[in-house]
Amino acid sequence: MSKRVMLIEDEPNIIEAISFILSREGLSVETHSDGTTANDKLRASTPDLLILDVMLPGKSGYDILRELREEAGTADLPVLMLTARGQSRDREMAERAGVSAFMTKPFSNTEMLEQVRALMAETS
Amino acid sequence: MARDTLTGSRIRERRIILGMKQAELARRVDISASYLNLIEHNRRRIGGKLLLDLAEILGVEPSVLTEGAEATLIGALREAALREGEAGAELDRLDEFAGRFPGWARLLAESRARIETLERSVEALTDRLAHDPHLADALHEMLSTVTSIRSTASILAEPGEIDPDWQRRFHRNIYEDSARLAESSRSLASYLEAEGKAAAESGTPQEEVDALFEAAQYHIAPLDAGEAADAVAEDLGRELSPIARALLRRAFRRYAEDAAMMPLDKVLEAVVVTGTDPLALARRFGTDPARAMRRLATLPADAPCGSVGLAICDASGVFTFRKPLPDFPIPRFGADCPLWPLFAALSRPMSVLSRVLQSAGRQSGAVTAMAFAQPSGPPQVNREPVFEAHMMIAPAGPRGAETPEDVGITCRICPRAACPARREPSLLGDGLAQGF
Image (cartoon, each protein chain N blue to C red):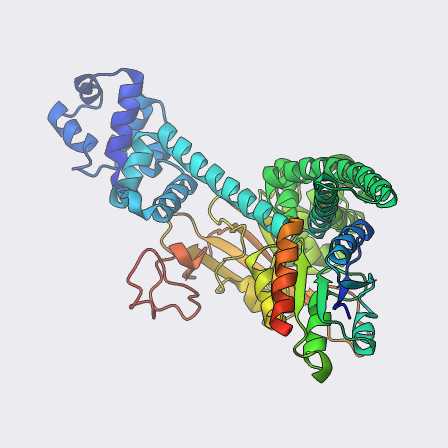
């Protein structure tokens, strides 16, 4: 059974590109673009990896991450955070919230795939 | 060297400007050339008839020889020297420098003021770049679009076949994203151009409004003529940033209300009798002292009562209006002296506090400061009032034996030792002695 990745991102064309790349890797990809329902979706169906944007409608990626770290079922879930804000304080905020890896937009597909593979390897 | 000991330097400077030989001047005032030489090198004090004779021959008022360069210039130079302490400016010869080279001194003081303005502009721009929500959104939009284009283009550029449906979708996505990118970058460029211009020219919005009032010499004639405040603000504030225009509208509405309550022609008649006494003026017009202070501060420059300064601050001490006087600067950046009655008034609302103040360490004249705090709006049920304080400053007249209180302008350059209000060590003294 293929591993599952949940992608929470509000840019439709980024969703399409990342979904294509990950599907080609043999991963099953579930996508969402609304921050407010993200934690419910994660609770209902916890993936093997979460790729999370920071600036989302309704709820920020930091808040989603903090909340999921407080829940037993998702406390150790690998999370790759994508953000257009690459300042050190944004990275610190992500680390404090419990991120596993952090990538600044625009990133290359190769770098993103390497991060995904590395995080998947940690959990397998 | 104290200022009144430099009379000789000024005599020498004036004589040289007139192209007069020392011997000739000595002969005309009936003293020896060697004695005049001692005077010109500040080694003999002079006064009385000799001073009057010298002033007459040199074609100046005696006070020009005894008082020399303006106190403001001296103060500005002192502050410039202290802020650039490592340059090693000879503070003990500051007055001599200002007296002998007034043009260079003015140039130096004005250059320092310009640097300070530019530094503030840089700070304001940096702050704006870091915290401007519009800018943050625009950059986020651009980076997201670039990410999408880069990721999609990479997929298309990879060797090997891609399903034709996916290929079409990716081409369409790149096309859409490139159009978005073009639009957002154009919009960002326009925004930066418009906002950057306003910020670079005058710093914070409050400083933009301050600069406008200063340029108008604090008198807004169209408002006194009864023109609508918002229209005047729109006209005079067209070059200001949007936030500064909003502040200007509020300031002009208040000015217009004041002008309606205290019409200019009647105030000009009244001040002939009341002078700059805001209480007397307020009584005549049946209004509060704060309004009278504002009217006095915004009279035309040739008003018969002379010019007064005014500082208005909110309950947190932030200035919302500032009109400094040459003898009493008001810092732009909220680092002023807590000893000013302006702040004491906030803890004693509805009482008029009157003090004679002398700026510590400055050789300028004393000023009379009258401060008054009152609620900034009408009373509301179960709501604590929010206070606003006014402090009017005027050159101190003869006030008998009243000794001026020493206050500072800002801690950094204030020489008062062991001041209970000191916020930070002064450049002028020993930090330990100042309690640090």
